Image 1 (cartoon, protein in one colour):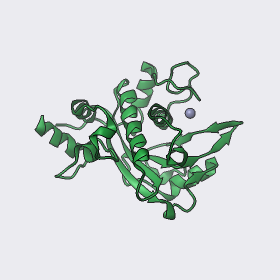
Image 2 (cartoon, helix red, strand yellow):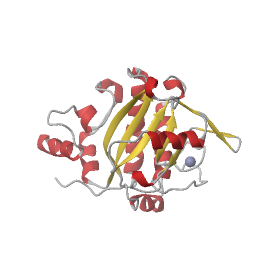
Image 3 (cartoon, protein in one colour):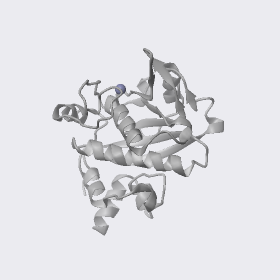
Image 4 (tube, helix red, strand yellow):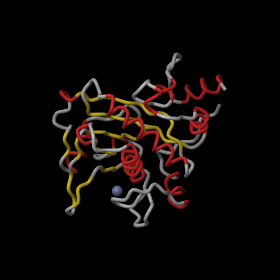
Length: 235
Ligand SMILES: [Zn+2]
């Protein structure tokens, strides 16, 4: 098992000396108590099977509050659980921080065009990863409804597209958002990034404004065809 973990860690480009939580699971925290029960075995299997990689780009104070780190980690863990049901793992998750004083006002996103500009101005480091931006405040109203996030990932060459990433908000990086809601929000937006449209079925992940996390076999098939879904690592 130890050898497999090392090999699996190589699959996500972890350094030779790696932290299981930070480098293998891609969490922001190194505190096992903060992330709940995890399965190393399941995560090894996720790397072996079809998977996506994420560049997590956080607009945040350089010292991210513990509560915010915890929500983001629970979000990632929740996305893993939701996507596992359709045979898609979340392998490498690499965080990048844009400190608030360098964020040029992008800490508060109030329109779709600002979200688009954010994804153009700052990008994740790898073309094989989906860019997920997490901002303190995403406050966009569309057709009279307040939105919590947006995602536009038209393809796998980031240089070609003007809007290339998911943008979600955690209100002021404190309070209001529960673990389940951030996981659902992250998974919903990534679902759009993997070609899914809205579906008005109670319980479905892609229901607009809903709280369900179900994905149908057909939705899973569609997602797995996206260019960001990579074949499993061989080890
Ligand atoms: Zn949506």
